Image (cartoon, rainbow, N blue to C red; front, side):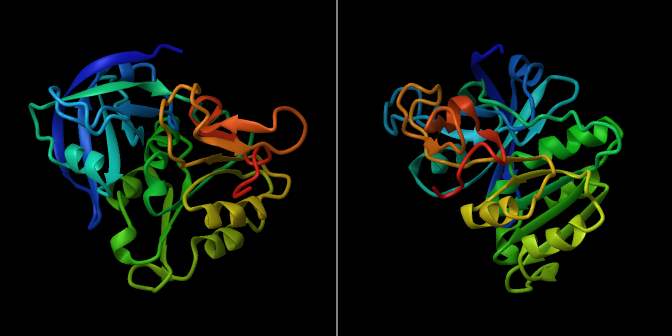
Length: 264
């Protein structure tokens, strides 16, 4: 896997739904080698400062099929993401990537991809949906949030998906209820479905209990420091035999549904 340390010019910057921001960066070396599910480690301080010191891990939200640009999607929650939100076209971001293990996209004969996202967990799933669309096997995409303000990227998902189903817990957009309820209904009669999910821990736990014998892959969201597996700050419990813990940044962020104990 080729990893680049790059000075990436900002091409576009703007809102993506009520609560999120989207940055498009010109980064050909990253775009030409990246896989959906991988992430960038982005420096979130001006060139002449060291504060905030730690980089922020952001999923690759979209990957240009022509290999010129990439996008990241994020919610402004602190000083680092506030800095990123202030970047404008012409500014330059300091990025390392692509990092981590992405989603396996070999479906096998007759298999149908079903993508499930919750809140900001939709970030890495857009690149995945677009990859399947580009291969002629568009996915069923289920997206949920607590309220309409928590939804993001519905425009690009609507274009990439075979079918897009939206839920909110309070019914302020789409169907009222949890996205996992909609998933349970759609799994009926789909024994060969391959499930891809990213979202809150409680959502992933529910999905983990629903996959049965189907193949399923989860992208985990955790705090990271080094981003390359050295500090062990993002370790999660592994299930079954083998190492007791896995590093989300190095061994993931995508894991098979039976590889890790969600919330363990």
